[in-house]
Image (cartoon, rainbow, N blue to C red; front, side, top):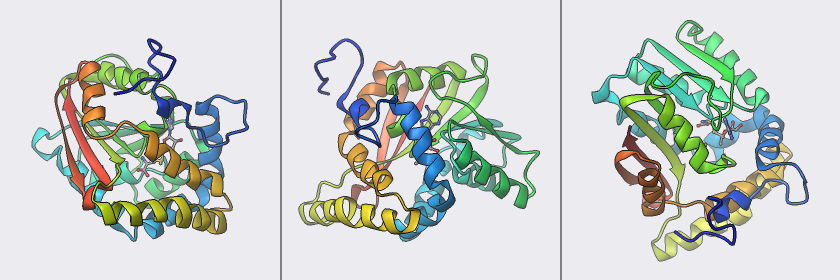
Length: 255
Ligand SMILES: C[S@@+](CC[C@H](N)C(=O)[O-])C[C@H]1O[C@@H](n2cnc3c(N)ncnc32)[C@H](O)[C@@H]1O
């Protein structure tokens, strides 16, 4: 895939896509602030903007782990904990740890876990995917839903995830991709570029966040390019599957 003028520094174009274009803060700080701001509407907007389809995507991604029967799972960029909760529902592991840099998102997630009575099974911690607070070879599986696109340094995050996976441990990533069929592509572009930021502005009082969603999806290395990065990051047996006309993909790999 194409690198920018920062060749050699592992900076891909997506690293330069930030939520607040005039801000001097790092991408990581901007992403944290943005998710803190929209946390109160995040779950609602996810369901609303995807017409509930994201629930099925999450289930399909997690089912990739059924045969591995992981006992302890790390959910990176866990946000409000939806992926961690679905993981528990499907896989019933001994323990799931979720990490995220946005305390606002984690607060909502912790309330949901408490409501489900799963505090002994799912624990949400403030933590950065690019400096994971666990020892090498800790987890049987790591999951990331709609998170990798937001990393400040994708390769660093993937290297950290690999470090904490046990040998043979599985990585499952769920991420938006761009549809390639002509008419679908045009409808998708209109929806993501025009409708989504407007709805984000009305419901979450924040159109930057949903403009950033569109911009970051456009720039993110997807499908074969993301598989290439996984291979370069020393993952084995990497493959992907597209969902719903190619607007989302599941990536699987192992250490
Ligand atoms: C689109 S949300 C996804 C949340 C959740 N996984 C889901 O499926 O709904 C992206 C999340 O990534 C988190 N994030 C971004 N960069 C991160 C990093 N370096 N370490 C941990 N979390 C990060 C954000 O704070 C945000 O909660």
